[in-house]
Image (cartoon, rainbow, N blue to C red; front, side):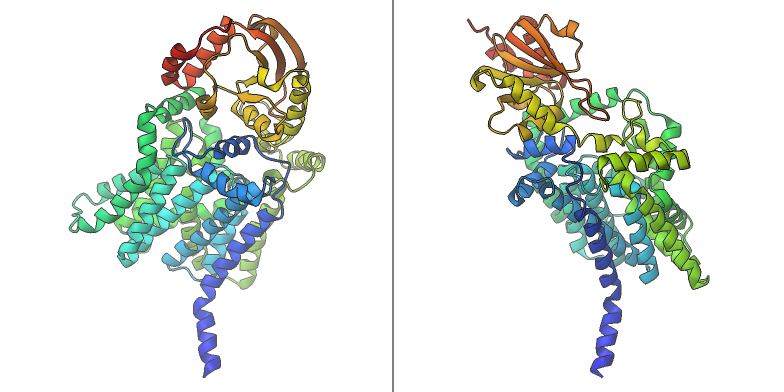
Length: 529
């Protein structure tokens, strides 16, 4: 009798154990390669902001910086900053498995859904860096799970869970608002006669969201809601979005897992028992994808919507595979994991850089697929851009300290028009590095209003002709030449006695990013005699 009870208990908990196993597997994939090539440009920015946590910033939501602050307790090592992203990516895999169960999927469906998200190159590439993307995927998936669970069980705890997921998702990246609004509008369109009979049960979850978000809203209000201005800058910077490339990414940036999420999309569009609630998901998916295109956003902004379709696709494929020979099941998983394995060196810093270049070159020759080597500026490198953005920072910090060495630290400033360079110099410079300032992104808030008369090490891609009138004496010290680097082409200038032309440029750059800064500049900037 005890054996039967134990066997029954194990059988009942097997789906949960399977989900946990896949989550652990996902964590281990990234944990073994945490150091990689070094910290990414964006990671350096978030890490520096995390040293002074705030409820808001000019260009980002604060959640990622909070994770950075917590990560600092593990030490200032590359791997330390990536533990939380790896954990959240593992939780996203587990939530995908739980959503599969809500759709009625059993062990095979769970295995397919979890394998699909684990093997997706786009998810692999965004699962280990201290960036909003990995947390965004988690909160979108948690919100999806809460909505589905409430629809199935009508338990108010899921409303609170969804409320918390939405609020913290907003504190991570505001795009989750697009997702929730789309779901709500589509649902009301499909069920125009829906009556909210019990509004009282919504008040608690609504209050929870407002309570969590209120400090950030107040911060934005006090600073003139800079997030709207920043969003306009981003949209203006993305002057053109190639529709063909956008659609190509949509179908192929998940690799072989495209077979799973597209099956899930069709499964929800044409379910055995069609209901308005089930149609909400595929219709919302199409709207979100189109909306991101119209906003000139990047497709990975919407990665959080895909776990739902991996889950539905797992159920769909499980139904089909159960009708076939077991050998077909084995072949299906081999194909899924083989593609994921081949794509690993393209999305995770698994190999030394030189070996990685050779591997990628061979893959390009074999497949003719060069998209991963296309950079944002339209050029092509021998490494994916996000790999290149992990290199060169320590070398740059060393060069800048050499230039600064003859000068007293208090009499020298380091100015750059690039937030990543500012973050890299602050992180790798140590105590010997003079004050690093920038009027770009949220570093603008901590940069001094006046530069007149200052001695400055200026890092920019500006041509020497543009820089020659910025100070009493201008010296071009060096031009950085690093293949496949964020830093390639950076000029290091030494400015002795910055003049009004430098100040005007500084003011214009600051005001272009943060218009409210004009007032403080006018009040506090006076020439030093």
